[in-house]
Image (cartoon, rainbow, N blue to C red):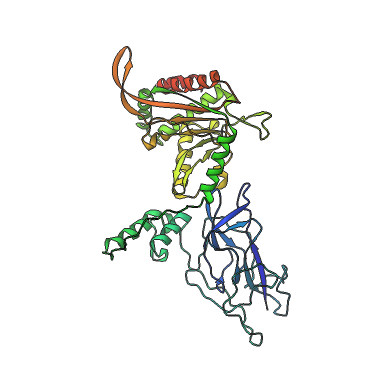
Length: 443
């Protein structure tokens, strides 16, 4: 007889206590394979697909879409075949040695769908155990006189998609991923492939949709948006922040970038140059690479610069972290910034890549604005903001000239330093922007 195994929500990352059910990927009564994703959940860090380590028939699933599930709470129960075939206690968590129909393996990496059953089958499986919490029961339980032998999982159709956001885009636009040919490495389906399929669909004339009447409503704070709201509220409530700013002539910095990119090798971005300036400035003013302890009784000075930077992804604003930025060359900073930015856009950042920052660089100039007074990324003590670089009239060498000018702002926790230190840091950054050759003295 089949043995019912209960699969609970695993720990998905650093300090996460739960996740919200975004979408169920299996139905009750469906046959699943080992490590097949069964549910898509959203944490405070990312959207991930959770694979089940058991292969067999899904007998129950717990939690509706939009519901919060705690780590360690039941997700699904699966009826797997026992090796002996005799009567066993189906509520037992132990079973006979694994057979070809019952295999348990460690969970594969979240967000990477190694197998997805595109052709699903439903069978009449045993109902969920009576002691289990309330769940969706099997629609057609088998009569005791006619037990149904467990059915071996069908060979799943592998869909070469890594990004959960690509899967979500395809689902929302009604695109069949199994019908697409991926343009990525080894046939990997990319976002552009889905967008081309959507464009082909909308090219055909569609019936006019009825006019919807706009109504007021409440949009719930969930997942990443909720986590961001809570963190910003805490930062604004606990940190006595102050901001100072200065205009800087970035003409020489932009000229240096053009010179660097005229030579063979990886291209150097403005963000990479600003990141290098930040690491040099923090070496000169190490008290700004710090954070205040939880109880407010001390200041933690960080020896390494884990540089966070603001990046806009499909799920909203995120802050990926470049580890040990002070130990990387300008080219290495550019490569890591580029990799993390692409991961932010595709929604594939891991929880580890979104935590542990000690200082943040915020380039809000990409939004076409000059200045900002941002809220600090708690528990960090400082943030450098950079506005757009734009041609403006400027006095240069005693004469009026058109120069490439930017506004720099510096927000800091007034508990870790006074205005003199903050002003000194910002002035040093501005001097490096105006005269990037100064960096050679610090390297």
